[in-house]
Image (cartoon, rainbow, N blue to C red):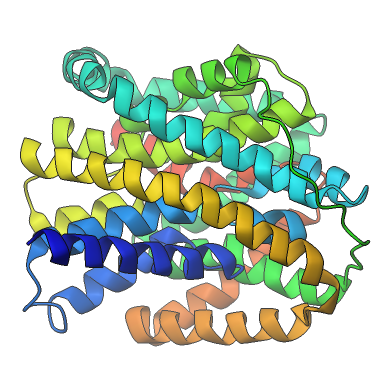
Length: 395
């Protein structure tokens, strides 16, 4: 039993490396794919092994997905905020440092998560009953806050409404896994196409080990903001990171630490929320809920153990891969990589969501390209989930 668990943990880490390094591949996409094939191809595998695989893959992904965000400029919905500070360092030849700052944040988040996990269970169980009726108002407040932080507020409102309307339409269609083509188009294929078009040249990178950064303020912001996603559907780590930076203002490098910590904490809290309130807030949590139905305390402890092991290993893997990438980045044919990824995404959408999914992917990709043209944070495109959820609560 132990050997099998370790085997699936290592397989999850390998899968997380792959999903993290391929631009446009989001963990939610993998979760949707696992749900689709679990009923047929994975029926003979004990559910506990699949849970270990998914949780280790998800945590590893939160470490590795900053590498394409910083070096290739193609983030997913959880790392798009890393583009600006990460690229500022990349242009100075400090891309490796940018990635390691997020890795330190993620590593400390794993340790912090283990320390506060059981107090969080008590806090969430008591707090959720109190605030669950206020959720739509918190979502409205969070949306207004994110928009108010933009210099181009009208542009942010336009993007929020356009993507929100698109989300409303798509989520009311009779289609399997509607979020797959919707989010893939808005945050994946749209940025892949633009990255192919731009043909960005990357300068030679300096590779030197950095000292552990100052962690208190970034971790404080991440710790306060990340649990919001445990309560608020439609909220992701991008929104949590912005809120965390408001709570605990930090500099550019500190913000990268905060992003790494928030990305990992949100994923970890999603498993805790699944246990406490039976609500899945991430694709990985949704996949586990579909596979195991009810999450017991024993399984949660197994997940937390998986998180600490895969998190520590992922830190050193990120460090090694970031060094290799920094040395080889000028030799990578990013256009070919992007085209290959685009073909894979289209194939997955057709396989899982059918021809209607392909149409949604096309429309959401065009919408994503249009919205990216505005000089605002791409996190505002999460209106595709926030607006439908807000409206749903008032119906």
